[in-house]
Length: 248
Image 1 (cartoon, helix red, strand yellow):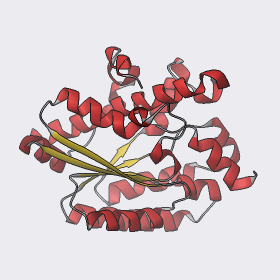
Image 2 (tube, one colour):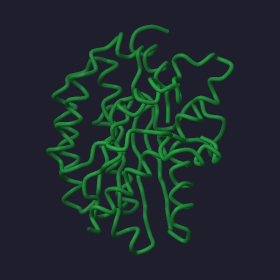
Image 3 (tube, helix red, strand yellow):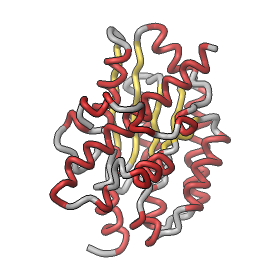
Image 4 (cartoon, helix red, strand yellow):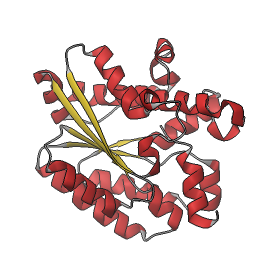
C-alpha cells in the first residue's frame, strides 16, 4: 500500500472516545480550557431546552473511529453517553454518516441525504482530511464547505467544523496547513464553530495523555479508546460552552 491510500490507512487509526472511568479525571483529559470555548450555538441550546438534541456527524475515515475496542468506544457513542450522563432525560441522538475517502463534496451529498430523513439540531462536519492526503485543490474544499455551511445556517442548524487530526506522519507527508486554513476560513464565512481537534491532540501528545504514534502496538486499541473518549469529552464541553453562550 503506497501513496494516498497508505496515508489514509495510517490516519484511520488516529480515529476519535474512552472507558467511562476516564471521566473521573479533569474535564476533557486536561485540555487547555481556552480551546473549549465555543461561539454561540443557538440550535443546540434550544434543543437542550426542549429536551431533544439530535446530532448528525459526517466525515471521512475517522468518523467511524477505526481501531476502537467496540461500538461503545467510538467517539460518537461516547459523546452521546457523556451528554446523557450530564442531562438525564434528554432525548439525545447521534447519527453517523460517511466513510474512508469521502471528500467535502461527497460529505455534502451525504448531509443532504440525511436531511431528507429529518432535521438535526447540530451537524458535526469532519472535513479536509481526504483533500489534504490526496493533495486535492484547496479552493474546491473551501468553496464546497462554505456553501454547505451557509445552507445549513439558513435552515437554523448549528454546525461544528472539526479540524484535522494532529499527526506527525501526516505532517511529514502532506502540506496540511493550507487545508487547515481553508477550514478556518470556511467556518468563519459560514457562521459555524471550529472544533480545534488538531490543537487538542497536539496538547495531549505533548502532555503524554495520549499519543497514538508513540504507543506500542500492543497498547494501541486502549490508546485509541482513550483518544476517542478525550475527544468526546472535549466536544461535550465545547457544545456546553456554545449552548451556555446562546442562553446568555
